[in-house]
Length: 145
Image 1 (cartoon, rainbow, N blue to C red):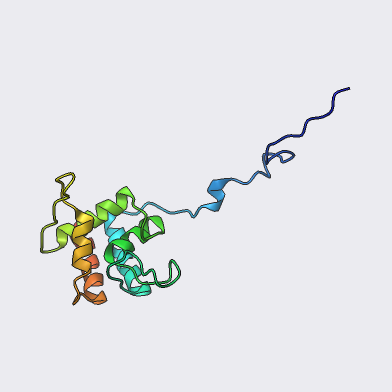
Image 2 (cartoon, one colour; image 1 turned 180 degrees about the horizontal axis):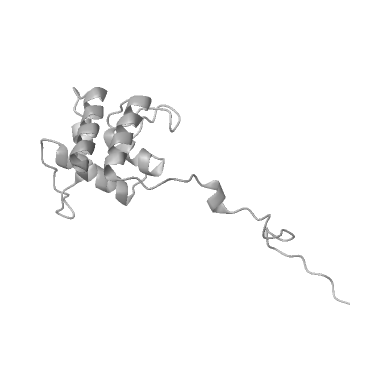
């Protein structure tokens, strides 16, 4: 008589209705348009505060500190200030286009570096949170028009 073998599956003995799914654990995010992202990013800066030299203030727990313009946009789209996403890139590009200066060229690709442009603008020592919020809202209106 052979001995029963022990299953190595972590789901052994569970029915399909009791197996947890990863998607059930992830936050549900609706798709936002670029103007909606820019407007929500303005609200994010108002709510969390303004940060310079970092996408997100690293001196406090994640999600609690200020954010820069790029960090606010990424937070709205992905939930994290350092996570990139195509919609976040489009929103950063739209804000970059609204700014009065031109983006620098990426040394490796020769393409405009929109993230660096917005980050450099955000990090000007005299730049205020109110200016960042106003610029995000103005860019949202410009894109929506």
